[in-house]
Amino acid sequence: MIDAAIVTRLRAAGCVFAEEEAVLLTEAAQDADQLERMLLDREAGRPLEQVLGWAEFAGIRVVMEPGVFVPRRRSELLVRIAAARAPEAAVAVDLCCGSGALGAALHAVRPDLEVHAADVDPAAVACARRNLPPERVHEGDLYGALPGHLRGRVGVLVVNAPYVPTDAIALMPPEAREHEHRVALDGGTDGLDVQRGVCAGASDWLGAGGVLVIETGRDQADTTADLIAAAGLTPEQVTDRQVGGVAVVGS
Image (cartoon, rainbow, N blue to C red):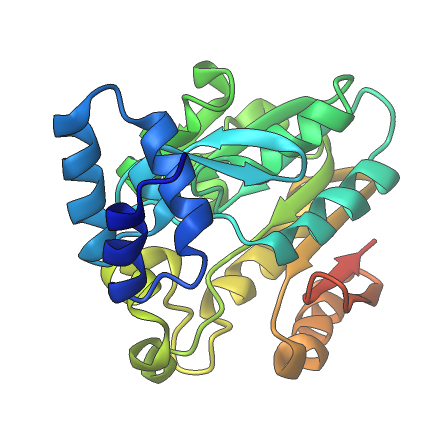
């Protein structure tokens, strides 16, 4: 039975799905003291997934840690595209991986793939190493993090790079701007600074028949496509209105 007092506290904190959250938090807590700590964190605005220590994404449960970007449902579009277009038994790279959710979900549906992941944020790398084989999660800036032997061998490069314009971060929900590391959100003046680096280097790392699959904003998709074209790849925009996802594929 749901504790009405817990529901009241969560509702007062602004939790829209207070009843559902009350059940999840109660089930996750080992004892009353831990439940109280979790409730205090949630009341302080920490994302539910970080409080619970996991997130549901693309049919799997992903380990989460404080400060690490919480995977959004819209990014499931990237997993579907990558799973459909990756060559058999290819190398897959989850670049700007955060928790490694994209790579883990991709491996769940395509276990034949050799999945690697990379991020510049040490906290994200530590988290991703709990969701993927730790020796395949690399720390560093974009392609500089990847082992050299992967160059020219990548069959699918799946990327959710930060694409929020710097000035727009202040307009994001407090859960994101206060509890996810800024490096996972800030895409520079127009939101596409990191994407520029991703697109410019993609051709050097993709193998024959390889594809780049990158998430972007609806208003940014044309520019992302131009960046992919400038890198020598053929761009294709894909939109999924059901999950709100927008991706550009470069092949």
